[in-house]
Image (cartoon, rainbow, N blue to C red; front, side, top):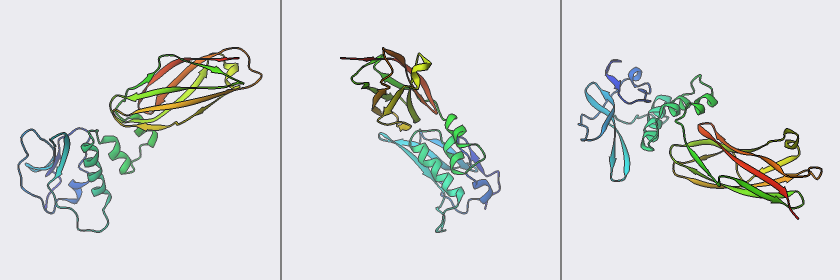
Length: 221
């Protein structure tokens, strides 16, 4: 029904999901509500529109759903973009992942919008008894999706690193916008290791600004 020029994309991070190539067989001729955003148009008619209703986000598609029982990659990518838009995220990296492009997965993760994770306390200390001790780290994600958040301990003295074992209650996890998480860390050291261990707890993620917290581990009575 349409030529490639009829489907136009106006929102950053969106693609036409292949609709320019497949065409639009049927669509509803409507006007966009005042205050909404036209993401995609068919000619001058709104085709995909984003807005708000009450406290929530809305995304509307003016075309007809396909009659096939099995959805093609084009329709899946369109619906995937709509779902991500409803979550308030830029759909660009999700779309690339869904369509199985040539970009490696880890590169897609690194290209996600940057998230900021706050960690408390500002300094950590633990008393070891029989070379075993522990502490907890409180993590709070301010905005965006924080992907593959992980913790590790780095000793100031490289010689101590191989004699320290850290067991994390959770690692390589995601945090939703506004989500908080407490991670318990158990530390075990070699009986041959004496004295105080000084180091840094490093919090990282594929799209997370690095956070560093000083840590002090000392054998107690």
